[in-house]
Structures are given as structure tokens and as C-alpha cells.
Length: 470
Image (cartoon, rainbow, N blue to C red):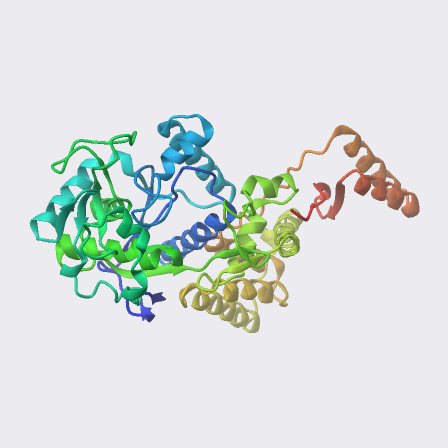
């Protein structure tokens, strides 16, 4: 496998620390609000990476954090804690807000067939680990105190700017200086905050009552579950200049080395050319797709047609095309199964066996070449269109679906109202009687009611018509 490593700024051959075992840490959600499909873009990509590694025979430990304290409304030391802002917005406690949006996040994961991480760890449940890590950093001489709390001294880490290629002259954030003029450098960052007595979530510490900075939680929890040096750390490209840069600094301050050997960053899902965000009001949830009649797995399919480092421009028409493609693959599986003649399969000819082996190699080469899932998906269609027998196509498609995670072979379960089912039944009777004009008139009536009929080898299937637009 080859992966683009932000640390080396090139595509590197992936070599796990311990052969056959891989540790992955993914920056998870800040659970103060719903996670929209822009967020879920990343988790589909990292889930598929985990699937590839497991398919190749590796034992993978996937760890993901849940931020439920310390993440300010900026990604730096500025603004309100997002959790407390969310609590005020909804008239709930911070703990209720966290529970509510963890549930929403996990529900979105399940709908997109994203595997649950092996460890899903909440920051508020790992305060002792964060305090112990800060103690190590302090003992190594990487901290100083100011009016706002305990601060990491980036001057002690000479290569601080290298990871994200920062021009520190441009990092002179006036707002951070105004918040704490005692900082030696504007980009020095808080490890423990002590100047917010009204903050709801706070704990005792050697530096006073307070709460952890956002960055320390990821370093503390990743090394707790994966060790002081582990294989892969993932996150969005927005994490590079601040959050991941500060994580690397903390690792150096505590252990004098990198914690992760490979740092992977995804680009964004855009919506009609704009970044999806709550502030712009263009955020779309997985449940919103379902209300418009889309299967969430169509979004997963659409995401897999994009490269994780290039992102994707989401439109309703592109999702509709993805839905059509997913439906076609799913129907292929259902129809081949319905033929029920697997026992009659004959041995493949040498020509067809060679062709099938070529498709296998092509698919896995793409998947292992810096997560080249678009090429892998293209290989699926190339195989489906080949002259290999359908039963062999079916076996190979389902094997590849262990990586793609499209849940192919799902029975279509749109529950149509009784009157729509009656019309579909009447249409079927007319078709069997050879009254195709009358049958087509019934089909049009069904479509005017917001449904369509798919004629498959397993019989007619009713599906909601897709609704496009905001």
C-alpha cells in the first residue's frame, strides 16, 4: 500500500510498525451540533481505508475521539467553548448536548455503513490522561504560565512550522494576542485553561481548576490506546495548520518524537462550489437525503467516486446519478441470486479466468495506490460489462464489497402506501394480460403520486421518486 504522507509531503510506501497490525487514530466530531454530509465525507474515506487494510489481512485497531470539551469556536484559543455555546442554543446541559449529537453522529455512521471504530473515546472521560501528559510536557521544559493558563512554548520546538509549511509571520493572530498578551508568541497554545471560572466543565489540576485545551485530548487519547508511536493519524485538511501542528508539538514535548508515522488529510465535500458549513446554512444531513427519497448508500457510492485528497462537489443531480448506479449494482446482485442456478456453474475458460484475475489485480492495485477508490469503482463497472458469467461476477462483486461497503444485495424496502401498492398490483395484472397501454397509464398515475416502479427479475419494486433541490 502507498499513502500520501503529509509529514513527508509525498506518496510513501506504507510500512506498519508491527507487520500485520495497524493502529489508526481519526480526529472525530465535536458534538455540539449535527454532523452533516460534509463531515461524513471524511469518515466514509477512512472507513474504506480500514476495510482495505483488513481485507489485506491486517489486524486494525481504529480509534476515534469525540470532542465534548475545550474546542473553542475558532480552532485556536479564541471564542466560546463550542459545547457550552450549543447548550445555550438549545437550553440543555452540556452533557445532554454531547449525548444528543453523539447519537446523531453514530446514526449517520450506521446509515452510511461506516464501521464503528474499535475505540470511540470522549475527551471528558480522559481528563486524568490529559493531565498526566501535560505533566510530562511541563517536566521536559516546554511550558510556561500566563493569565489564561498553562501554555505550550513553541519556541522550544524549532521545527514547529515545518509540518504544515507555516509562515509564522502570517500566524500573528491579533485576537490571540489580545486574549493573552503574556504569550511569548501568538501561536503558542493553551494546554490547560484556568481563567474561565464560569466555564461549566472544569476539573482540579496541578495548574488550578480549569479544563484542557482542544489539542491535548487527541495526543493523550491516541497514545493511550495506540502507544507513543503508532501508524496512521487522519483528519481534514483544515486540521493541518493548527490542530495537527500542535499535536505534533505536544508529542515532541512529551516523548521527543513523532507519535504517528503517517498523517493523512482529506479535502472537503463542497455543496454547489461552496464549503458546507452550519454558518453558511447549506449543511445537509444524511436524514435530509432520506427525506428526499435517496438511499444513504448512494452518498457512500458518490463519495467513493472521488479521491480523498481532491474532495468532491456535491450536487443533487450527482447524487441522483449515484443513486441510479447503486440501484443498478444492487439489482444485479438480486437478479443473479434470483436465477438460483449456482450449482450449474461450469469451470471458467482460461481466457475468462485470466480476465477475472486481471480485474482483481486492477481493483486491488487501485485501492492500495493512495486510496484510489474511483479507479476501483471504475473496475467494478468494467467487470460487470465483461463476458464473464454472471455468477462469477456476483462472487467477485460481493468480495469487493467487503472494501466498498455498499451493502450490495439489499432488499429494497421502501414502504409504499396501500393505494400505491394497489395501483402497482393493477399495473402488473394489466401487463400480464398484454394490456401495455393501460398498464403504462397506471404507471404514470403512480409517478404523479411520488413513486416509481422498478421491473426486476424478482418482480416489481416500488421506490420513492428522488426529489432534487435544496
